[in-house]
Image (cartoon, one colour):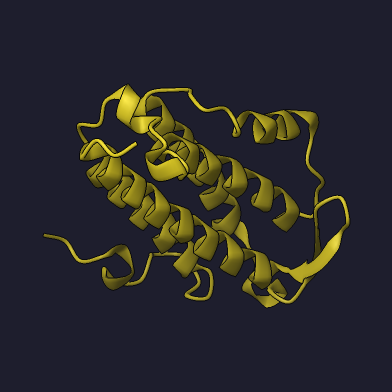
Length: 167
């Protein structure tokens, strides 16, 4: 049994200030692969007790990571991202493998951006959303990490409920 990603040592070539978001992505990959293993498509999209489905949470992790990384880069969302946000509300969708691949793709893109960040610019101002709410590069990195883990936990809970057949 391997320790959690953050306990596997430093990431070569990555400043320790930005490494935690990379640990978060790897931890999410591993946990979601483990806890969704063997779930049927019906279970992936089940809404136990009215809570969000496993599929919703994984699709939302991918989409929110993409959107938040756009803000981190100082850009506004494009039409494709806005359409993907709307599609997250759908009550069904891709199977487990496609969802995990979607999330992995978003993480890989984000990892490229994070690895290229200049740690001296963590306090640089950024704006989020249509209202251009103020934050910083480090503020966005922290939020991306905590938001990802919040939805990983919810997806794991949904997977456990779906596995026992709760609706």
